[in-house]
Length: 351
Image (cartoon, rainbow, N blue to C red; front, top):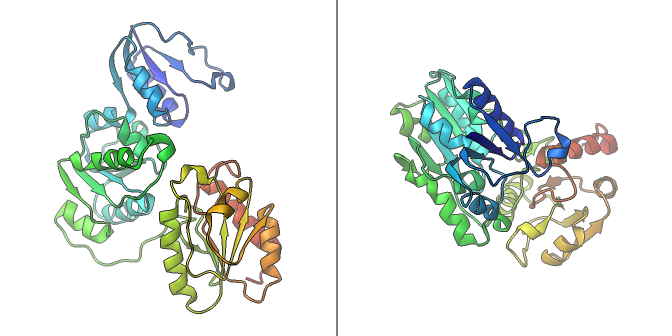
């Protein structure tokens, strides 16, 4: 029998490297196999498999169907890593601030310990399965948690829960239950302060140092412009608005929205604080109908929005899209980079 890699994205390719290193025979299934060149692809799933390694991007329904195949075991890269890697594993999840919390905790732990920073934040866990590190910080998405049969973590951190990814989970209840899986770890907390998390994990205090931030998370491009492209849901937008209101005080500012609202389980949202709301992109009309604000305007693209702001008296900007990229951009990183590029082109050094 052979193993099957189901889904050949970043995670699937990481699984492949792991299987090759361990001399395990395998085949690959992917809906988009035409874009790859490997001769190990198969369309025949109706055979006996030793193990099926399922990628996190696979839908909930597909994952259920995989369990009906003739197979000894269905697993994920997270489960393999947790069972075979010797480090103390810290799983961190939440609707918002997962990456930032992981990155901040990583900066603190690496001052004294050897640490992996893996999972949804960037590099797949199996790329580091044989690293001889003392700790592994694993950012866990709800899709990753949903596919875990066993949550074999030393520490589980649940930061927050708000409606998100309803398109994948079907209901908020399913999403909430999935997120709470992380609380099946050996030790658990809902703490989100990285310094307190450090003490909870190590039992030691650490000096209060200035921590570096990841890009596009309420990032100050200047004192007048905030790039919060990572805002992919209404909960994160609400948080950004509170911070922007505090930063700009009584000065007027413009909020820029875009992305696909169909993934968000809301009918109406009233942003508090911004003078104007500028909406652009392929989903602009859908967002416009859901936003309750007296000064909301639709534009075809970001360049038009920034040109409009360049003519205004106030040039304070909060770019906090509040929705996943949808058909506008590949991901929030591309979206954030494009915003910075257009900002520089239109405003030059005037902002």
